[in-house]
Length: 362
Image 1 (cartoon, rainbow, N blue to C red):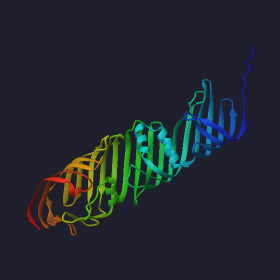
Image 2 (image 1 turned 120 degrees about the horizontal axis):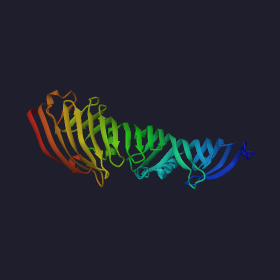
Image 3 (image 1 turned 135 degrees about the horizontal axis):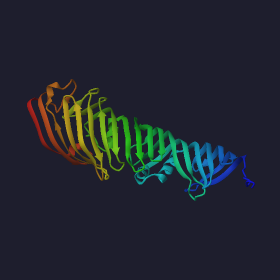
Image 4 (image 1 turned 90 degrees about the vertical axis):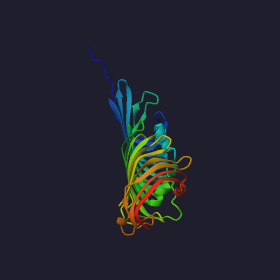
């Protein structure tokens, strides 16, 4: 018997001013131009340009595999879009926890270079889905509920992966300072390898923490912060270190710390789902002063503090030149205090405990 003839077709088409509705979201793709190569087992789309939703496509390619169980599509789109449009796109596909963070952003500006991947079966309604992408930030900025001041000049790459979102050297500026974040948030909201660095003004840091210095305090300079985050977005755990060497602090009658004198603060704890920060350990070192503590901080509906501080014996005679503590010049000082209060003015908080001075000189 003779074999049945098999029909195949090959060729090449040119498309211009094309239009389509793509994927489950029925995103409009228009002004499309491309070269289409037809082969026996596949269709290849090359040199694709046009718009896909809010994205301006400058280069794209696609392959349609003609399998026995139906055709499937794999598509890569390269182009750019406004940062605000990207945020809206990410919010639609984000988990509930990530979505809540995204929806707090306001006044978003800047552009994003995009590599966008789509894939899925063509024979199934809504089968085409977003399968990943890279988003390179270009001078992006925003304001909103997350921070008390705008963020500008953002750079770095955000990668959307099958199992979460990766942040690669994403940084920017805030009130003259700078920051950078790296790490990953998994699809279920877990933090993996998340680190953060910032160098900001001391007054800027206090504004972020919603703590007001006393009117007679003199604060100058900037601090450097490093943090490692783990746990979940809803209840992250943290380890943080603050270096205040490049600050000068003068609280009359309490403390005078000159510029260039090293001071470090380190701690660890977690932020609960209701926004309370639990500090399991806090240590301040401003030699010869060493203070350790623990406690809780909350900001809603107003700032509250509930904690305890204990110092090691402090030799006042060993204080370096230019530094003073409580106006004392000699003796051994020890402090143990419980602190409770509401509102940003620390002088209005309640302090209970004891202060011991041995062989003191005022």
